[in-house]
Every structure is written in C-alpha cells, then in structure tokens.
Image (spheres, rainbow, N blue to C red):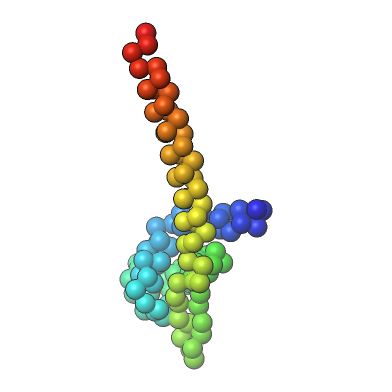
Length: 111
C-alpha cells in the first residue's frame, strides 16, 4: 500500500502541471524526439527535458537514446494506477450519493 501510494503521489504530482499533461497528449499519438517535442512548447530544450524527467520518474513516459537523439514515448504503466484510484474514489462517492438519496427519500415530507 505504501509503495502504491508513492506511485500515485508521483503520478499526480507529474500530472499537476499543464505542460506535462500536454506532453502526454502529444505522445499519445506517437513516439517523438525530445527536440521535436520542444517545438510545440514555448520553452528551452533544457526546460522541456526537466518536464520529461518528471514524467519519466512517475513511470508515465520512457525515453531512449538513439544515436544523438533522445526519443520519448508513453510509459508502460501509463495512467493505469491513476485510473484505478479514480475508479475506487468514484465508487465511494457514488455510494455516498446513494446513501444521501435514500435518506432524502426516507425523510421526504417530514417536517
């Protein structure tokens, strides 16, 4: 549980930045070099590499060096851990709403 919590923490921290979310969206269609990826963002190559590193540490992205070019693609884990957590959270919220609905039905018309 502690290890999966750390994974979730890294994933949510990585996803908290709009640039990193945009990087993931761009990588959703294909593998791309970091240099090519940087053309889509108004920042230095070094700045973009820092964002990619955060995504890589969270397991959301993998990189590999081919010659002098570093290629970037979605990681093998992608967002499964986050999706599982969100599904369990959604389930808990739905149960609470069901309980509220039951309560409101029972107390309907009661002064």
